[in-house]
Structure formats: structure tokens, C-alpha cells
Length: 402
Ligand code: C5P
Image 1: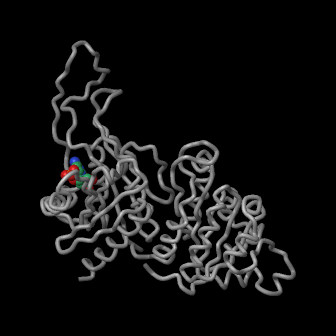
Image 2: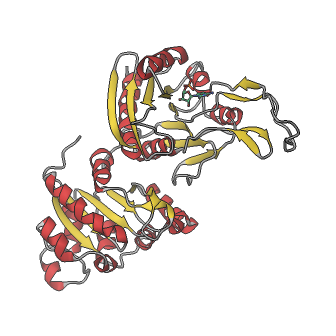
Image 3: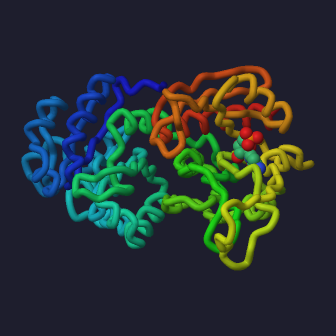
């Protein structure tokens, strides 16, 4: 992991209950040997005191734009120039809106506007506020402006709601800072990713499917976009919002997913099949709801197309990466898949009592290629996605510059 020692980091804190986690973020950055200047908005001070952050960072907290005493020392332009990195955590909906419209209405927004250092925002807000189209528009604008958005995570919120809007943990933010702060490893590459389950219709209201939440595939899409790729995400039905700044194609069945993938197959540079594609579909899909006239029914199932294998065997094939969830003999089974489907790389997760990635925020991935095997460890799907993208980027470049 690249070192943060001696890096100068501005930590911006805006108003939100997640501001209590910012103290931990500052402490951990100091532990890494970074110099930290905290800048707070007025709303942030309702949640955590400047004194706490001053004690942790060893520097007076800055919170006022037109403060004559401070401006004579380190003024707002000096803070903007001083920073190697700027991290705003938590970034509230209001702050995101102000930044997206280029306002310089307080010290933190002004520093963000003035700096040429890479900026990372860790949004935190109520799930309804996060899902609102105004917020999503603002996030898309900021991403297009080159700002890295990390998170939010989904789960239980302080307000009692459940959904996306939780600020990432300080360790995850630091991992983003070290990995993607200045990452252009996939600049100019076009990357197509499949995610989520597929639904194979039995009738208009019933389907065969599986427990894939889509979280791993969406995290991979976000990490690829953060690394500079033009990303297309082809997703089966999930509860997740389309990530901003990414071309999104929703599909239902394996056949529809294949058709969407075929649109890109000649033009994409990297294909990553994360979807848990149903292996079988009902031979017939009834046009009206099947009635329960008898105690048992027999379904005739037929194989779905293997999308990943088709991509890997295409004449003008992209760098092709698959996923494998295995309950036993994970590594040998995955190696067999790598060989049989003709992949460049396969990411394998063992599904057992200690690791069930379906629906979870965490996973444990091992990468296997024809020549090596790398354990990416157990971590959040966000962090694993970044590690995976960085491995894919250097292997893709090695392959195409050879
Ligand atoms: O053969 P298996 O289903 O275990 O392989 C898993 C990998 O193959 C995943 O990358 C998945 O996205 C892909 N796959 C596919 N089409 C299928 C089945 C699996 O693209 N019909």
C-alpha cells in the first residue's frame, strides 16, 4: 500500500451524525504519519467539537472563511495549495450540492474549489436523500469533474431507516486514499461488467433466481470508473441504485444479459463477469400465471448461455475476468473454470460458514491466473473491488504492451 507518511491531508467535516467517525479518521491518518489540517463547516460543529479534532491533529481547526487572524497565517488559498489530498468525510447532501454548483460559500467549499489536489468525498445522509435525483445529479457532476466518491455503504441508519447513506468506515476511506487518490490505471479503457442475479421467468409473476445482491459487481464498476475507465454495468434485478457516472443497462434473464453484453463485445477492452447468472431456465415461460391445480408440478429446465465463455471465446476478445463462488475444492474448481472457459483471470470466493458473500458487505477473494495465485484477503467489497481493479489494470496493460 502506498505510504501516507509526510503527506499533507486536509480533512473536511460537514454536518451529519457520521462526523463522530471523523475523529477516528484523523487519528488513523496521524498514525500513518500524515500531516492533517481539519476544516469544519458550521453544521459539523453541532456534531463534534473543534477541540477534539485539534487535539487529535495537533493543529488548530479552521472553520471561518473571513477570519483575519487566520488569514494572516494560513489563509484559504494557502490551505488549498498546502494539501496533497483533500478528504471530505462526512460529505452532507447540502455540501455536495454546493460543491457541484461551484459555490464558495464557506471555508471548506472555497478550499475544495481552489485546490488542485485530488478530492475524495465520503457521502453520509439519510437513504431517501441519497436516492433523490437531485443528489444523484450532483454526484454525477462531481464525478465528471474528477472528484472521487467513496461509498456510501448500505445498512441501518442513525434515523432508523435502512438503505444506502452510511459513511464508509475510516479504514475504508484511508484505503481509497492510498489506492485511488491519483489512480488513472484504466484511463482510456472501456470496461463492461455484469452484476446481480438473473431472473428466469416461469410465468408473469414467478421466476427462478438466486441470492446475489449485486454489491460485488457494483463495487467493481465503481472502482473501475474511479480508475478512469468508461464503464458499462449490465445488471440483473437488484435493490441497488445505478452508480453515477456509469452507463447502466438493466436486464432480467440470462438471454437478455447476453444480448446486452454482445452490444459491447467488439469494443470493450476488459470484460468482468461478476453476475450470478442462472445456469438453467424453464423450457417454457407461461404467458399467464400458473394455477395450482395439482399437488406437484414438474419443470423442464434448459441450460442458459454461458455469457463469460462466449466473451472469452470471441475472436476479438477483451481481457476477460470471471468470478467463481465455490462450496468445495474452491481453488481446483476455479482453476478448471479458468482453463475451460478460456479466461485471463478468475476471482474465487469459497462459500462456507466463515464466508458467505451473498448479500454481505464483505467477501474473501483469491485471484487465479494461468501463472499465479494471489490472496486478496478478507475485506469489504469496496476495498476488494479496488484491489481487483488494480490487479486487472496492470495485467491488462502487461498483456497489451507486450
Ligand atoms: O460456471 P460458473 O457459473 O461457476 O462460472 C461463474 C462465472 O461465469 C461468473 O463469472 C459468471 O458471471 C459467469 N457465467 C456466465 N454465464 C452463465 C454462467 C456463469 O457469464 N450462464
